[in-house]
Length: 417
Image (cartoon, rainbow, N blue to C red; front, top):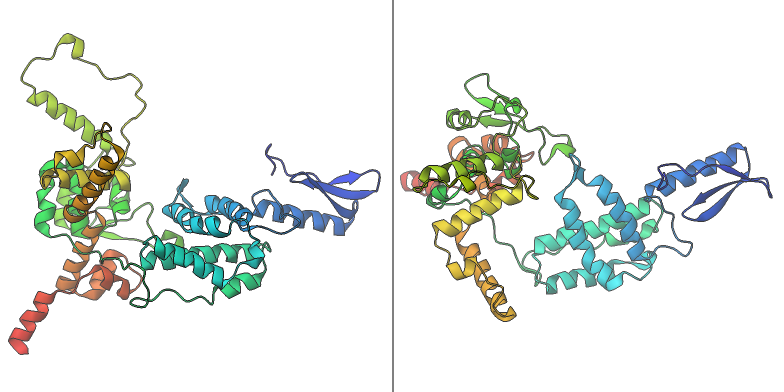
């Protein structure tokens, strides 16, 4: 369809008697008007034009910048979930940045493994993590695969890029990532007084069940099956649903008790809502107020504020609430919490760097809670049970999440070794 929502028409060119269609400002002559061959050519051109986001390949061939623009339109349509863009869209934006910078104006048909190696070296120089570099290189390769599938670049370009092996651990100068580990229980418990009741409930549920942050945020009464001793939660959306996999979260007695505090009569409503948290906080402030409220201050809220509290937490707001709780629980210096704009630029940058280092040392994030649950499940019930609890398709993925219980091995060897 064109900008006005209509597909460009199959028309007759009166002077020549040929069929014609106008796409992207260019006239394409299709042969004798009304013939089957001309209609088939028209259908093929329309299909190609729509597949490329309502544009056609330039006559001289695509540059890499032009290929990126076409591919990006595909990404915006493809990487969406429940009507919203997924994080993979941001990942592609990061991956394609060095490609556009180094080779954007060159012909896409001339791209090859040596140029991809140069881009990878650029990522290494930027101190990107080795595993992330391999994933970003894979994204660039997939763009050329898409281009080959739509006949925008020769298939040989994609085939040649596949010959480039990924960076291997210990055989490259790329930075290695630190493994994600469980959070010690005393560090989790320390933030309880400093986070809203809703956030603490989500923390505890993750620690008990091994849910992903995105799964606990969208809990609704209608998604929880309460029959039996153990309840079952089936999220309306989850990370691997596009692979055709289901997800079941088992809720034991402790999790059930916690959920009963947030159960809502509206079965479609999210159990954990920032709106509820803010309302409870305001009620608490009123109760703790010692002086009477003046009549002029009874209702000072804006009638139509620009920012309204949401119906559910986002992954970002959930993580931010935990970070703020860690800052208060572990005593982050006040000059690092609030960096004044009146300071000169160098001093602001210095304090931001110190704040980042402090948070890296003292703060934990919600994804680590999944590791806590996986480690405990593996220790108590074995690897297969931990695999089911975490919702992994393969046991080797579970081993990444579940740390081996060294103390159990030490106790066994002390008795039998």
